[in-house]
Image (cartoon, rainbow, N blue to C red; front, side, top):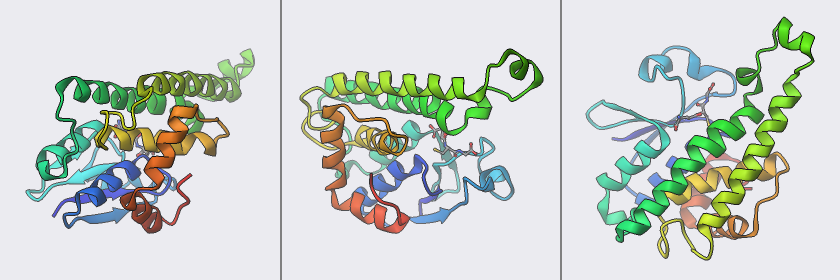
Length: 215
Ligand SMILES: N[C@@H](CCC(=O)N[C@@H](CS)C(=O)NCC(=O)O)C(=O)O
């Protein structure tokens, strides 16, 4: 059975939503990611990158990287219709997912949530007065700019791939979720997309399992 390793507050929520949307049986392993469990055995033996989401498949093979896991789930469950049928729509949705994960999350939110990884609190930086606050401010600016770009790319579309929900929407969902948590307002198209996501039964079920409010 497919097993998802996840931790509260993380981007793994989007993969959990996909598993619920698909509706096939799956297992989960809840980890204390904030407490550093991902950096310790046995998990760092499962995924040496020490990150969630991590998926272990039926044959024991491990998949990492948000977009890769999402795409594999879509391929493994074609009946769920998680990829747009039109190739141009599929490429557009992929562009949005890559940007949400690789830039808005990794670069922007990374600076806000994992500030010390971007600005070591060493003597030189301390002397120059380049404190961690600058990195956070830079992260906020990156998130604000990134959300603006995603909003433009979403435009009048209901979902990232057009008229049907798909894998990219779950990546939008988790960055949309994080923005209000750090008091960054969502541009109107993303706010509306976030509301559509929160109304999905699969999202409601995952929020209940995670015990967190959706927004
Ligand atoms: N490149 C990875 C990044 C995943 C990632 O950043 N996961 C975070 C949670 S949102 C994590 O596991 N952090 C644990 C840590 O760094 O201690 C992906 O696309 O899945």
